[in-house]
Image (tube, rainbow, N blue to C red; front, side, top):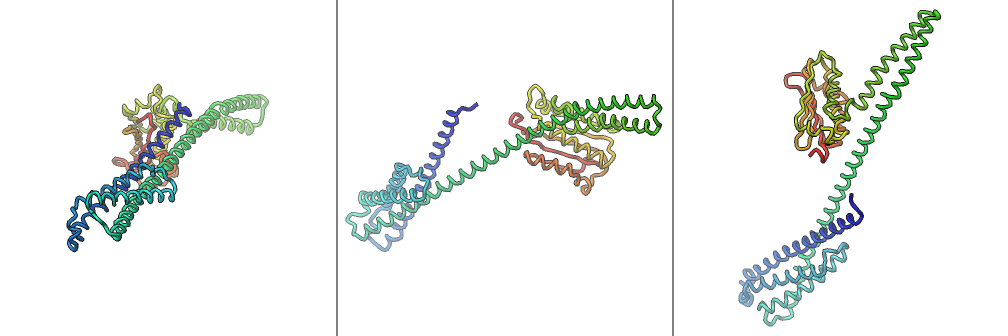
Length: 390
């Protein structure tokens, strides 16, 4: 559990890291651009202008380059000393760049005198060197600032997207937990309270029916009461129990494999069933480890239920095969039958399959309905598991 002091320390560390990255971006971008300008200017003066001016030809290339490098170093140093990377407003960024460029320009002219680029420059030469040096430094610093600001905006947007994704994931998990809670509550209500009341009603009807027969009630009335009792008993034993299973499958609390065994156990005996589970899935499905969440188990069971429903609905299948495997934190569920030949025009239209596919998409999974190995259809789902299943 995190404490407020821990959270504050983490926030401060993140802010320091951001400032450090901003500083590196600013200084590195400024230095690269300024060095490029400085090298180009030195080469141009040495090999272009020197051809037309003997005075320029007497100045060594390395002296010109050294004075330009000195300007770059001064420019970067002043920006670092001013902590220009902390600027958040445009006018502050401009002020830092202008100030650093002015200092770097003076330093460049001093370096030119020191390295012998100019011995006794005229006013025009001094003006030209100062203006060109300032422009070079300002452009370089401006590009560095632009790179820093662009990276800063990109970082903010990335973190905002990450936070939104986390919020969506948390909300989805909360909805899943709420759905499971409601399903469990309704299933328990159907299985417990409603069935108990139906049992009491059935007992009372049996008593009324017995008295009616003793008192010689008309045969039609006795038959009607008997029909009501039979329908009520079938509703209690079949409809209510099946509705309870649909809401919350049997043995789901014990694990995914026990729930699937209970599901396959209700398939007609004329249809052969096979459940193949890899060792990796059995390890994750161990109820003592609690690796697979209830929501993941429920969704996997829904995939198998949909596959079985489609097999029974769209053609007489003689066998059903269910396979479970996991790789790289993704649960793979496959349900295959040997019913009629796969017809995309029919097999792809069930609304239940479409809704299940949308549900899997919400959690980053996917659902594919395709032809079987020889005939029939194959329903496959890939369900990303939680951090504990990685």
